[in-house]
Image (cartoon, rainbow, N blue to C red):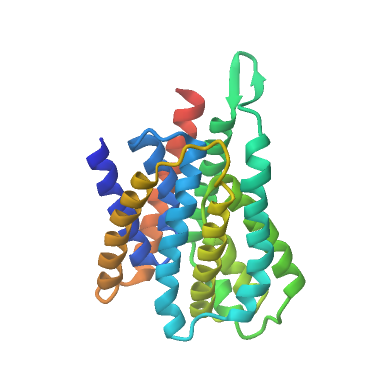
Length: 264
């Protein structure tokens, strides 16, 4: 099963390299169902993997001038503060047993998985639908930095809870609220995700979580291999065709998690 898990980590990196974002949302399911990692601990590993992979992805965008540093700072500061606060102060005080529904116990781990599955459903919708509105609005929308700041807090909080980057929330915000062209929105979002994920990961240091650094780095290494392969294949495979296909896969995975955890 571990061999399958490492192969899946390569595929996760491959999808990230091919579609430019969203692929990292598979990190937590891979860790939970193929490596049998506790869901809460898996969000810690996910923050590190997502942060590292996004940082690598943002380098090429920065070289191409597709990173708007001013917007990244305005969105990133509240997002980083929120994710760090959630990991450092909120997650440790959430009780292991949340509540009971009859004889069914909703635990902290189950709550994380359910919230993550809902996030996967939302992410799949953003990948499946055609973003016509985003393309048309980039020249007419004025900057709305107060809303960008507010959404930074919301996205940072969500990232802190589930360990996912939230690129499907950040990119529309950067296009619609900051008026960035799509390419700049993608590049800027990768930088924001990298910073908030890696700094959010440091919020788990010193807590009662038992982090296996050797495993985390090995898993990240396999993901890096996938990213390099995916980035190379983008020369031959169009992003627009792959993203909806991947979106359907994420949708199926989200439904599977909800069904497995709530029905079986």
